[in-house]
Length: 192
Image 1: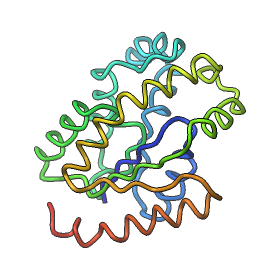
Image 2: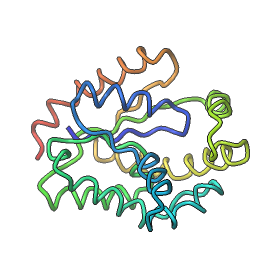
Image 3: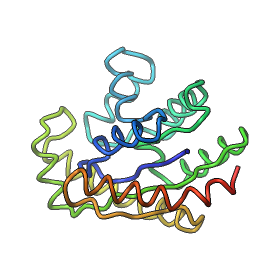
């Protein structure tokens, strides 16, 4: 299955993505992880992305798209993948749909994890990463909300968006996500 996992920073996407990739036996494609790795290895994309990440701005679409397109083309993604952190905008979503369609593929389901902003602020303040100071957190959450509304509308119009409550134990959230994916499987089997 090809799944997009949406949720604001601090929603628990990373935790849930690890569990989902094990359950589904597909690679986890986290743009945040891919970007941090590119910065660590001082690749061209990493050098271009680093100033954006340090200041709390989103990395430009073109850089992120190149990372994702290159990764989806790898052999381990033929049977599916879990995209985490991409797409973030409706134009990125359309580009992804076009890229997959060129290869005779389509997304099966988009899972959106919803969590209250106050909970997110509390969770993020405790992580202690370079891109998680208070001002950066607030800017990232604001950007996420502005960009995600049209993205969620885009996937809702395609009939593949499934929203879940992200509060509760990791097991409770995982069970909600699994139920949405299981419910999407019959529809996914009827698509390419």
